[in-house]
Length: 202
Image 1 (cartoon, rainbow, N blue to C red):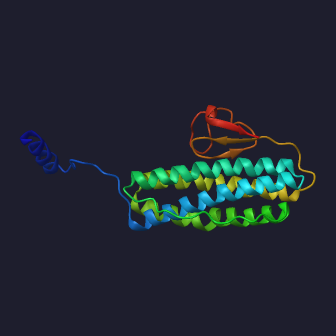
Image 2: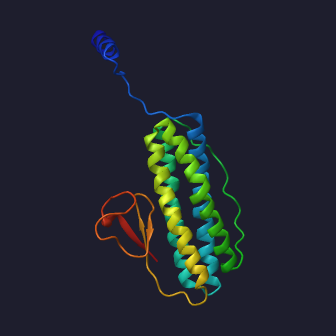
């Protein structure tokens, strides 16, 4: 016990904290919870849109929705992990009710949602996290932002080609959720992990 106290005093004297705990501002934790809930709902919503697309005769679009649903589930989980790592509390909530429309309408709604996250939500959340130097938050928010850019583009392509969508594979990085139509040569362009982390989503 005495040794532990002495050690703590020595560390404090040289400016090193005895326990280096990660932390973030209340706002960053609030933002991460909003992102966690948003990605939870997105994963659930896109899974429902995938079923609707299959039923409406758009199997290729259904495939895309299944891939993006898997991607958002990864963001959901990395956001949750960041909240915990930064000492925050993961807030409980209820998933939104999903009432799919036509596949065209579902794609339009998805483009709108992904564009908002890409252009407004995630850049704002990242600015706050960077001001906090909350590395766990910065990492997970950057992962999501990079993937949402791809999702918005893929949804727009699917809408433009609706009814004549060419057969296309979708690969999702199991570390960061990046969604690609082709495997990278060596590493994920977002998290820089090996291409072996990608999973083909059918």
